[in-house]
Amino acid sequence: MELGEAILAVGAGDRAASFEFFSETLDAEWITQALQATGSATIRRRKLPAEYVVWLVIGMALLRDRSIREVVRHLDLVLPGGARRQTVSGSAIAQARARLGPDPLAALFAQAAAVWGPAAADADRWRGLAVFGVDGTTLRVPDTAENEEAFGRTPTRWASTGGYPLLRLVAVMVLRCHLLTGVALGAYHDSEQALAEPLWDQLPDDSLVLVDRGLATYALWHRLADPARHRHWLTRAKEGPCAPQGRVARRLGRGDQLLEFTPSHEMQRTHPHWPATFQVRAIRYQRRGFRAQLLLTSLLDPVAYPAAEIVALYHERWELELGFDEVKTHTLEREEALRSKTPARVTQEVWGLVLGYNLVRLAMARVADRAGVAPTRISFRHALQFIRVFWVTAWLASPGVLPRRLEALHDELALLILPERRADRRYPRAVKITMSNYPRKRPLVERFALSDRHWG
Image (cartoon, rainbow, N blue to C red; front, side):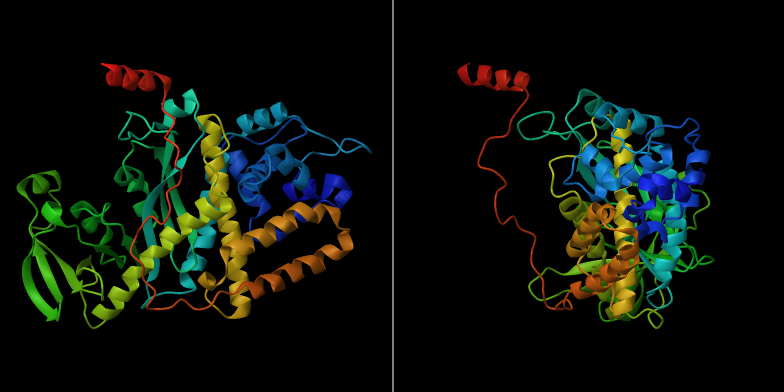
């Protein structure tokens, strides 16, 4: 049974509306192909077929304030078994998720991003270049022995391990519409540079990637700066002993110059194909109230790529941080940790999370296009709330009114247009309030050790 037919079969056809909002975006055939490619397609007739579990994992992300069993009930993901509505136990849900595994969700994300990403990037280019950003973040996962072994913890001032195990995530985002096109997952102790390694090849031709300076290396500069493919990079220079040292080859303007770098003998031995020297453009600027900053880029032509525009463009890198905030603060409702208690289900949940986030962002892009504004002018928080309400209540409505409700939902989202951002709005990073006045809970072994140390 195809996914579309299966969904229409649920609840004798009147429960399918839960999926209609995303049906034009997430092709049912992609789900089928992802399941078949990873060997996860359902053969036996089960209450929770693999196709439904895919939607369950996405629903878990978008309905973070509901229990998993409530997500199943609200989305009506159980196949009908007669006149009486079927129910499913918590253990059956866990078994269904374990059978599915994380690979189909990862494959589905990759397939969908390959279609959504180019269209989103083409919608708003800068001087002919698609604008991407790459950065990393972490997500807390439940405190179980399996998760700790798989993901690890962060050391703290008081203890060798932190409060929760942490999953590390590195993402590629289309900055001007907040669409994720590439994601790499790993343990906390995996470096962002290592996790980002497979993502660089996903950047398309005629593109510019804004890179966090923690990821910027000489090797990456060579890898991304490809004149044949017209790929470029932009980053902020490191400071102190790690600051790049280059010879001024040419002055392009005030605070704008070309630097010539010579790789060390060790780097030349490691990368014999590198040229003896290479040039990087350096732009120094300072905004009122802030320290002077130095930008480095492979955009060497000062006429085609003016320095003032590059400085303004670099600050769009913050859009990636705003995207992480949308995922962690709004989609996950600032919960302490993800739901899943085992590493495989944690990874599966994260793939469902990034898929759900992209679906919301694509819905917002359609609304923005209808309203004639940039996608970043649509309120993510309120759009997510509208979609949640629709998903939760759609199965209660009669089939005849659902098309009108879908159209009305898009019109209501158009009312959620944010005012234009103020160009002079800048605040330094600071903690406004402390999270808690209570001492941190430490493992028993370390508490006893501190107690022994105190009493001598």
